[in-house]
Image 1 (tube, helix red, strand yellow):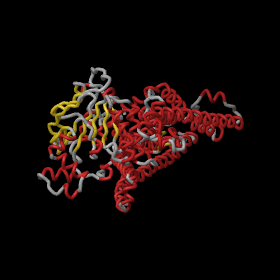
Image 2 (cartoon, helix red, strand yellow):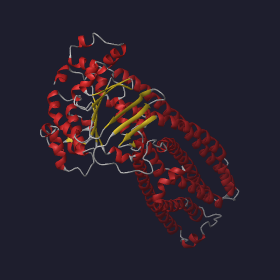
Image 3 (spheres, helix red, strand yellow):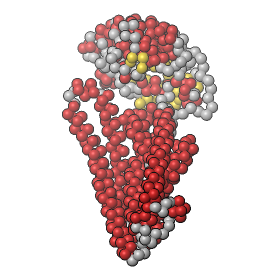
Image 4 (tube, helix red, strand yellow):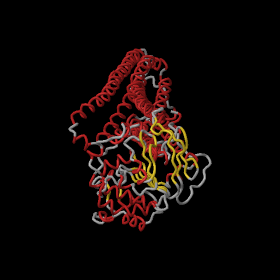
Length: 618
């Protein structure tokens, strides 16, 4: 709670104003019963009248009709003023709650963007979306209608008890006699509600994570007729959410009636005791009626406090999860002292690198190689051999466990992260496009990239052909994840993006796997131009895209088995030669004579749907 209150600190002036309005409103709430008491004891049953508000007694007329009219108008004024003060207080707190949640959401999104890629590998997208949306909404309820109104309820109780003590200490003691039972009931309710709300928050996160995953994969789900299985899995998750809510509903089901029963019991005792005291002449009818009104006002804040406790429990469960996210610090950060990244091409060196995503399940084992400035290097190997991992280590998405990754002779851990990554351009097999226009997806937020450069980059990679056919050309809408564009078109936009950014280092990760042979031939010259005077790393299964690389590294089980030029590797007649034969020759002959069990595993594990003999011959 102390930490949550820090989000209201920038708006403390508004909160203070809201508290002032609340204080006045609470004072007005106790005025009604006192005016009722005055009307009854002075005008309706004028026996044993004891002035409670002497200044008001002097102001009121002695004539019953005029005095009652004055009291009625005064009562109306109290009600109207209470409305305006209540509206002002509610409006200010709602405004404060929205501003505080705006700040919290902004902090959450900014923090998420600083976390390591490894964090997103372990946490489903739906769970993180829940933190920024549903959990923050729960906290908004706390700020807008929880904290200050709790203060208001406490003020109301204080004022009501003070007024009742002023009217009759004995009857006040009778009213307070039920409070120990109310406290015990509230404690039991708190225990049940607290456990229930934690389970509810977990269940909501699971629902969001499941929906995000299955909506994103709806095409696969329908293609393989998995609808029924998906429905059954969701029913289990949804049932856990329902059961958690049922426990909360049960708690509220018995809590409110019990508090209501205790309140009615107290009022019944007041009626009996007050009637007896009136018969003795020790109490006036106006005091008894005022006590009944105060009795209703006395138990209303108690019930409101229980409702606010509901909000409070939900907010605590949500804030635990939000603060756990905010307290997750990235392990990959920029060093305190950094140096500017050099301009132009830089050399790359892997110095005895060992890396594992989990424990000592090594993905790379003692990998060492060097790429001179402006040279290109190609990585070849079966799926899981560590090709993409090498590119991730270059951009420092992960840190190595052993060895060093050097750029321009400097360990990547010594470069400023922003400076490091802005000098990379990456073209991936699975292209990610954002909602917006074609132009914004090429520029990607870089204001220093002119419209002319965007169009030049698109023309260089032959993306301008299909962009010109779109309704609004470069301003045409791109839907979520590029829906409506072919895989090849999205990849061409990704190529244009890489060209427009003019990077020092270029990474092509299966970059032409989704482009037809004719288009691939068209953009090969553009690729050669963008690779000119840049250090380039190419990951590919299609060997036609890497034959001109200065150095080709063959990876197998995370180790470098062969490296050299295309012709050198063919002359070795080893793993690379076997893969080349598989792609360009009769596959029956290419696999008929494996020279070793290791080579046989390499060939068969290296097969990929992207292998195409017609594309290879292109």
